[in-house]
Image (spheres, each protein chain N blue to C red):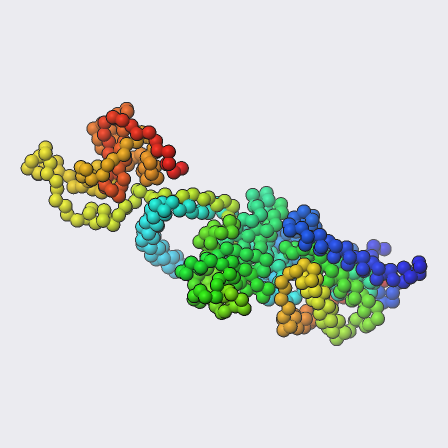
Length: 398
Length: 172
């Protein structure tokens, strides 16, 4: 017996080592989360490798900075000139877009939309990858001690990169959207069709669960839908490159990722997402008609104090008490100094824009600020003597 | 006398010093992760596998070969997000096989090394895909053309790498 064991000793050890590993795999597969069962081994491995990766990245960045900041400055002047021109063009564009944004916010407020805003991000440097084609993931130089948590979204300026999967003390593993175990709730920009963006074994990305009777055009943008509760809505995921009928009821849609996943250097980790209701910005222009009214010549109203109409006449200006016509809108009363209006508009009006200063009773104790709906009548607020202050409305948005 | 864990029972058995035994696999896994990120085409290579084959063939000890393969494979697994053991099992088998063949064949010849690396690359991939699909239910995709290219590329890189590692070998 002993001779048999001695003869096949190596083979027995091989079988034992393989058995232990298979058993370990079975345990990990059985548990849906491998954070507990294999975390120690992962921590050891990452701790052994990440210092070298960080050192190499630091060396590379430092060398690159010295070269780019001190030696390679050719063409900086012309580039600066071009950038200035670009800024001018973007400023013009910004004016137009801010008006559109204001309009969108007003509409969203009317429809009581809740938006998700990226309120805090953290820049991180990519320091390495998993080194395996079967695991499309990268390591970043921010971890637990920097406040990174699992399932945080990772993005670049171009689009979505992936999500944080494993967090270690000073590094984190980010699962790319091209990995086959990744899934992102997606929506097509124009057709508004929803689906799931998944990585494929080949490394490509596909949009799944879009019915085959739908029309999807190549070139259409794919955005995050926000349905997965990880990625905020509206972030760029990629662009449709190929659409073909699938084997089942769904279309086979290939997507080119918006972010260049093979050349990632720096990424942003979304550390906080706020969900809040859109509120219109009332400090800006309200309506096109108001702007037009400002510019057009108007017939001055006849003033009772100056029958001749030559002295003391004022041109009505939108947003001021002067432009309000009697009986045009019913004013609402509010407690002075408080955001007590029954709509979001009242809260957004800054204190300086109240009509208190325009009235003879302005600043008097007990005065009541009357808020007038801006769209119904042009003046934002007028002031009347204190009679019966209206209590704060219960349904005032926070 | 330097401490090694290579058996001296075999003829023409080589050993590696402790620093090389630890640092070379570590460097291989590190470079695999680093270079794959910097140069995506490098993913066709498998440096840890080449190190496993090289160490196993040089030591010609089945025990040393299988444990070297197991440790390198598990280390490589730990850097991925997949269950630990996929590369571990595949490289354990390769380490055992390479050391077994190393006893019987002349592995100093470049041609033999080329063919052996090609063969063990195929063994590694077959074991990996079998475990991944059969046990873990991963949807890994087998591509004949890719595997062929990758096998040939690894074989040629292996021949170069073994020549470099030969300098670290010490005759027992």
